[in-house]
Image 1 (tube, rainbow, N blue to C red):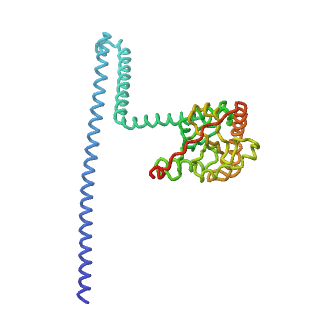
Image 2 (image 1 turned 90 degrees about the horizontal axis):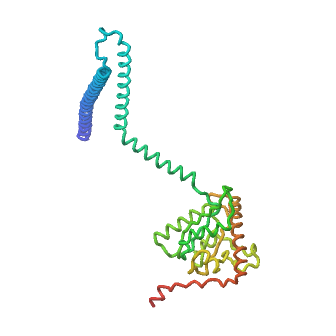
Length: 333
């Protein structure tokens, strides 16, 4: 028992000794490093002082030479004590020389400043240019009077410009800025069992848009996931009584005149213009959702009424049925 206590005590003494030794080494090293740093600072200060003195002497000599040169050119290179009548001219030349010296000194300082800070100045220039572009984009960005989301995966995503022009015919200048602008967002969602990276990103993008009620109009088709169709307004028949183009999924765009307008010859007959139900979301209250619904529904009603009338008058025969893709399992069998 005594041996163990002696061992512990000896160990503690050794540990303390190691600590004191390490501490001493650290303090000596720190002192040595401080002395080295102080010598470096002194040497650097002395070097800068010598450079500054040499620069000032050079500037003085340069100014003196320029004054002498000006005196020679003007024919006044005489001593001031023998021709006192030229004292005033010499004084003016001296002042002019001092002005030249000041200008030369300023130019050198400016050149030195730009040289020493060229990287920071370059970075500042890049920041200013990028910031200017961002501000320009912000102030010139068009705010849409209406937004339409295309989730039908049938080729309509290639007709964004045509769709925008098409919907602008039925959209009013909501924000009163003097023009009508419709934004078309293309997110072609395929079958729900498609787990590709692209489809996963599309689903995430669409779900993000659903957090707000700004974008109420959605173009769907028969392949649209039932989960997404559940959020659409399925009670449009009561709002468009007797209209054969209205069903539980919305407004059927099964019209040849629409395909011609969009220049989409292969447009299938299962495309619908759907509208989301006004419900409270993560970003918007129920009241806001209802206001956005009414705004989008007004455009939808103008479109439905006009296109329905034109289809009846022209006896529109509709579009070809969509070709069903063969099931891969059936094809193998």
